Length: 321
Image (cartoon, rainbow, N blue to C red; front, side, top):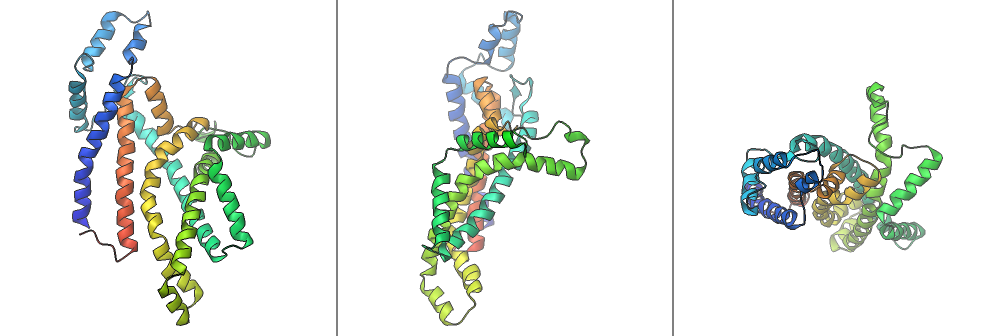
């Protein structure tokens, strides 16, 4: 397993470089840049703009600029944000934590709800419980996430039960430790529900189908013929085999959190990487775009590697040799 992990890490380096090169070329080939915006400001002289362009290698070719960025990247220097006027790493350090909090809450809620609902739907197949779960799954899959977010924001604006946006309340610093946790939890509820609902519906349907297929296997019939308790058959024998395809999906779920949460972060005013990426693209802040894209690529590769490791851990028949 260690050899396999090292091999995947070595393969990940050229993949990330290829992704970053494509992103860099697309950013350069689109019209305009951040310095064109500065030229529209009469208070900034032409000499100042030319000096900054030379400082950040903006007068060099695209390939030279890219290799200059890669050379700094291997020294753990992500560049300088033109829009925020601070180093990129300072922006990412805070926004990455915020996105991780939202993503972790969403994944924890999604998987803790979807797996039991899928098992429940399979055990009560074609009964009223299964039909209700199927109905709500189809409704959740067909409802756009941004529309659901606006509906929830409108509902809670009328009821006043939950805060409508942001990550903290105005008096957050004056609260106690437990008060801060409660305040953060209240702000997490709306974006977590919106991000998780479609994933819960999808995973619940997949889990139900996998579980029904496993329950028809010969070894389940043999276990029941031996008189094993039903709970042991379901949760020890059937569940371990039915959950394997979902572990494979775990990597894609982890990697899609950044793109899936971007629109919700904007609507709910959550200060994460998704909203940061939109601001960076609109401002043509290329170093910030490159760093945010790199975080998304790393998340994709780490998610797939994590799912492979979990798959080998849960199923002793799988070996990476």
